[in-house]
Amino acid sequence: MSNSKKRIAVLVSGGGTNLQALIDAEKNGELGNGEISLVIASKEGVYALERAANNGIESLVLPRKEYESISAYSKALADSMKAKNIDLVVLAGFLTIFDEQVYQAFPNRILNVHPALIPSFCGKGFYGLHVHEAALAKGVKVSGATVHIVIPECDAGPIVLQKAVEVKQGDTPEVLQKRIMEEAEWKILPQAVRLFCNDQLKVENNRVYIKGE
Image (cartoon, rainbow, N blue to C red; front, top):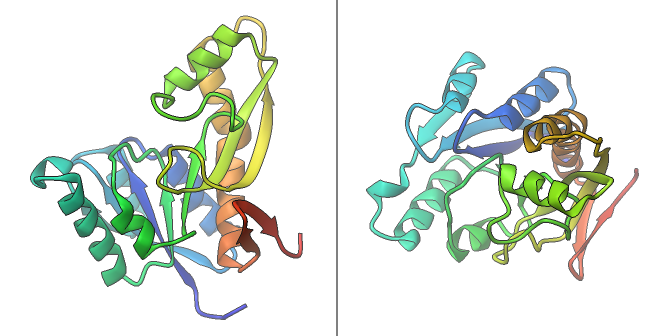
């Protein structure tokens, strides 16, 4: 394990609750060899930018509408992170599409947290409350969260960590969303980041192996 800190960029589009979980984890020494070095927002004025400012983290706004194409946007995104020597990219509610330029710049170095147990309730259209609405409509007894490595195919990358959360009778999508955030997302996302930053993740044949756990 190298002594130099791994530099993390967190990509956000909204309030940044998962960003806050990572900030809190870093303060508590729970990100191992990682440090949050950059927050990139896809629009101005989101609360996640205030969270970054309040914690002395550099931030950048890259509004999609200012770029003529996904390709131009993706190049700007990849270039801005390469310029800051970013080692790990974490998608924390980042809702803007990017293309292979970002994947090529950061192969097996992009993590996402999804609010369900992949392969259930994932893929195109499954984001935000839609995930929990679908889980409740199906009548599942457990749901949860998954941290996975991001590949071009939506929600299909190798799974790093998963945590199950009980679905209770009478749950609304909002209640279930909050429980999954508190009991799963905010716990396993910092754990996965720590494992990456401590060089404990190995990807082989679309599977993640955790060393030394």
